[in-house]
Length: 394
Image (cartoon, rainbow, N blue to C red):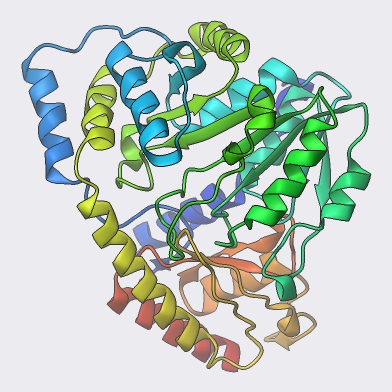
């Protein structure tokens, strides 16, 4: 069977690939510790589950509107006003089966063959493959570990041209956990304003998993409102990954186009997930705040433990639940006839030798690094670091 060029352009996510390999080894009886997936290990708060059960019992199980229940759209508008003082109407808001689908909807609606998309490094694995699928060209903007992965604004200015259709980034970031400063976001806003053909996608799915206090969004620069798409969802902040519920806010014409596209692909997100999300957005955030407190404690422990491993360079991320240490000091080293040349070799060695699954940095555009998720119990994290330290000591 021959597959299309558009499918052949897309690579499997290394995040999902490493997770699958870890599951296969676990099923074969190996004692695997997987620190590869970006999934909180907390349960969905009970009040949200109760709302879903109540919706089921009330028979709210029919097809919802493609772009989202009116009640959920209102809750999203209220949330944007409450948290960010942003005034959006329901016509400027859309719901999808996860933030990932929102991003894909926007890219497929705006990027044609030959168009360019500017992506700062490191980037979430799916950005580049979505652009590849749409036939666009990725233009990567460098950042430096020593600068806390701050975007090279001069390089971004140089990367933008008449073919640039999108600038996309996440803050707090997956994979590095870094936050973009107000100054950096202001510089990006200037670039966007000077190029009216550009849409900026601000991926804010980790908005609430922020160890520095108030979330800083590019949406504060109102002059680019008509060129801005805000992406968010309930997966991370409310530990609702399996509910598959994301949302976007942006120009009404773009939202309507994405609604048309989604209507032919998946239709609306699950009705029960939507009713649960209404409660999540409207109710007390205490469970989220408690979860963030635990993540911050785990971050501090992991930084301390990993810095005890010679050759492991670790910064202190300010959000999300990942570490993105530099491991290139291990490149060129050989053990048992196997030489580590790359982050993929490094991760494969640790999976085979330490039975710990990480994600190679090459998946995020920076091969000198690996991503470590600390969305696991403290005991499991401590055991994982112990194994890594022993394996790397060899």
